[in-house]
Length: 122
Image 1 (spheres, rainbow, N blue to C red):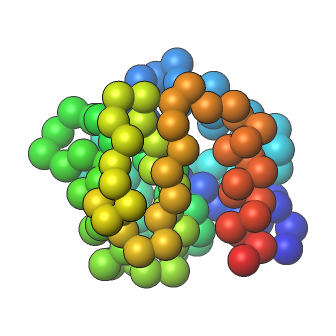
Image 2: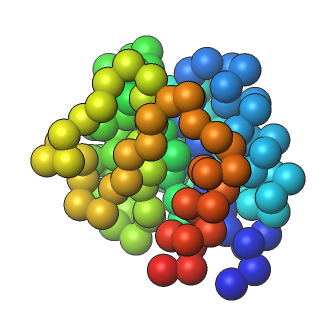
Image 3: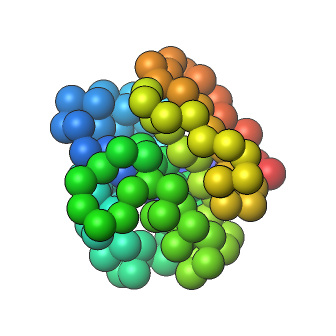
């Protein structure tokens, strides 16, 4: 699979963190969309059928946190692969939607890209 065809939606409310990982993923050949909260993410997902990977922070402003967003994505868009991150919480595996992965912050951007390559090829 050509990685430039892999579309990732990054959901992160901290602009500098979001810019950093978006830039890194684009440098690695991913096509990246970005949202600052779950409401923005749902709007993007509703209008874009090419998203293959959701990368979301847990703690975000708004009515829906990253865990609830991931559950909604699993229910509404089951083919999308889900990777969840947080520097404050480490959810139990039972709290994650089926097939979702968790990566703690601070993370190495190369680790994120490698993870995405692996799940894109799966």
